[in-house]
Image 1 (tube, rainbow, N blue to C red):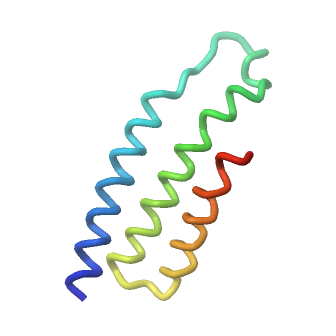
Image 2 (image 1 turned 60 degrees about the horizontal axis):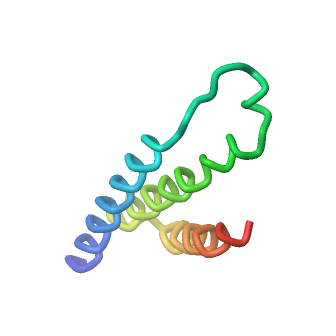
Length: 84
């Protein structure tokens, strides 16, 4: 149980650091035309993956019954993100 909480805390720290890093990299354009371009929405992908890591590590920390699913969802999303 202690190993699980240590791993969960490490993942929480990593997820929090990545979330902060990805939030600071988001650029908000001037004008309405830029909001409808693919490049604008592509910058939110890494942020969504880091939020998934935060949720999965929180579930791991508290021992939620959906921990395996959220960790698998995070892994699946993180592996397939470079392809899309």
